[in-house]
Image (cartoon, rainbow, N blue to C red; front, side, top):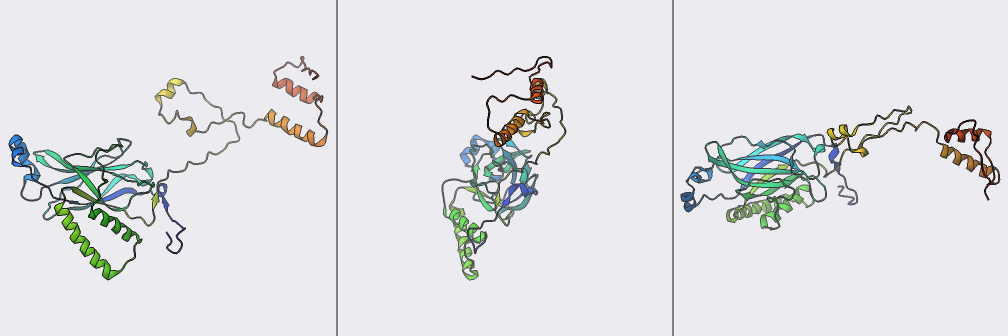
Length: 328
């Protein structure tokens, strides 16, 4: 957007982005609590979980793109990392699909897993993140996703594990202001910004300590302009002067082929009579010319040439001339 002229708005189309979908899994925020002793008495196998360890457990994150309750890619997971202080990955994930091929309702499912025992894992929490906003714009920048504890991300259209909730906290309000600051919507002042970010760090630490929720932070690419969802335009069908015969397709063949082949509005149908003369248009042009050059006469009879043409159109034999009756 031009700062001098607020009426001008610059954006990019999603169909022009030929790059693969990429995002970064940053870190996990929140406090994980160990299982209570009474629960361990009922289920002794829970004592082998990573949350029961004194240090940091070997957790990892799996992600997948879904749309219309169907997966678009195979699941991907983060590499092994030994955590010492915080759960920080800072790992970029590149999915084998391009931005221009994404549907509007594309979602990212993210699930954090922990050790549950030998060769088994248990979900720490899951979340479903929509890749496009309400105004059909591709999301960008840093996002804080709410993790639903002990649940795997479902990825459904009406998901039960949404990444955003209606409840608002102080940290959520400050993160929205940070996004405006990074976009350039807020004025920048170096000495004041340093004090503000230092205070925000203190608030963030206090909110994380007293909150019972787990949050997963991800970073999406920051494009120079807003990216609006758009589908690629169809290539124009080249018109041919020669007539191409249309081969009828049996109903049995239509049922066994792809559903796209049965969708008739996607394909151009060649008319074999397109190159021939249209008798209706020819008659209309002759009537217009006759109206301009001579008075209109309802009793005007066709000449011999027009009579023969009409006989051919009506499939009459040459020995049976077309007779015209006088109108009353």
